[in-house]
Length: 348
Image 1: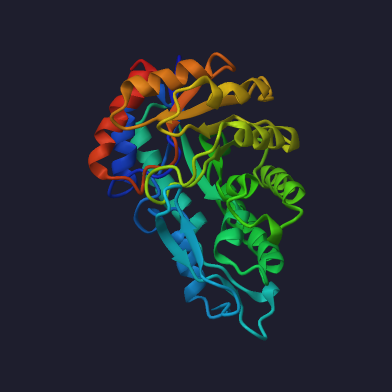
Image 2: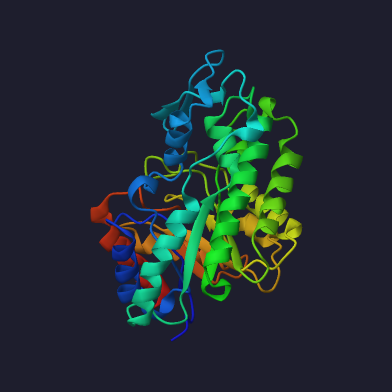
């Protein structure tokens, strides 16, 4: 049975042991109200892009840039959630010769085998697609790379991601997969959380990058974008005044894509149950075939979740709901409740 009504969208990370557990749980409990299921980004990918940082640290072609201060990720309440020693290329290394080992393609291909078997066994509804999520190259560049090396790093890392996508597309059936770009650091840069002085051309750089990424995914493969404010402590990293920045970036993505977009997912902070937050959604300019998914599902807040959805629908069409971000970093004991909240809003 195909998804009907308000669907549930799972951003990527799920706090379960492995991909098979994710597929079985979502397939059984969400049934016909999901169009796609991710592999849950379990294991080494549980902390989203931290595993990429680890591969860079282990790569002998990179060293810590001792000429810049340690970057602190500071939450809205002043809490330092983590610190990063940003990297540069080792002296004498040609960036063009650097080999990356993210393993994105290996993970996607291996976990599709499990997805395919469970779908054949009827555990996952036949129309549900396999969702592959990947962080944008600017996410890695802005977070883990010194300003002194970012331009060169970005260029060669994009090439690596293009190669990974090529491997995935050669191995998996295009009509059974969805590709999702995770857009976080771009949002933080647009909001002014990251140093705009280091990237004075960010208002050109970011839209051009997001547009380029849409072209890396073949047009016969479903494509979506997830925008977020980061949630290293399982809550919004910063608290925006409203959804204006999200709408502005979503419009850039929609206008710059050289192909159809299946969906865009936009988050909502837990405590925003007011019209002011949602009002910018009236300026959202998505093509008719692009669905909007609202990240309004929060644990233990059934009334607030429903209020957020109702408020958003005063200003635009909302086709689906999800959490504000991936749930992989969240508490496993909250996941049962999150599924209940998803089902309630989806009418399961």
